[in-house]
Amino acid sequence: MKLTPVLMLDDIESALPFWVDRLGFEKTVEVPDGDRLGFVMLVRGGAELMLQTWSSAEKDLPGVAPRARPAGTGLFLEVDDFAEFRTRVAGCEIVVPERTTFYGMREIGVRAPGGHDLLIAAPVEK
Image (spheres, rainbow, N blue to C red):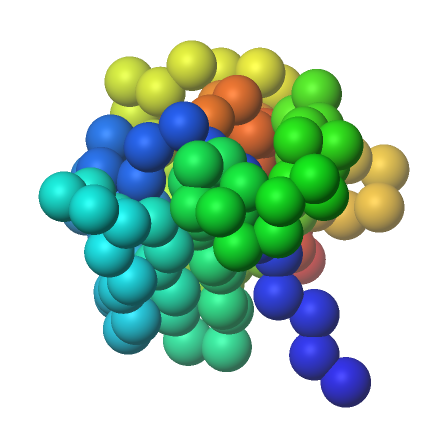
């Protein structure tokens, strides 16, 4: 079984610097929608993420996509090197200040493009 989130956005181009340049994902598939991108697939290690514009989804699934508009999506990204990712998100809007949880994770939450929240976490070293 595999679960891949699809984040819906107004535009993909403004989100790519966050996912590709900052977090190190690689764009493996892109589908144009006119002169813009309508869909991309991103991968890094075992993680996979899809980005799709609202306009391309509405063309693909008329009548369904408008009902799917969420208030936002939260993603939990577990990483091996917390310090590396802490540096990668420097300057992003912080939605969860850095903390150590009762379940043994060091975490920080940032707002990703499109209003989605990304919680980055790594196990606390013993």
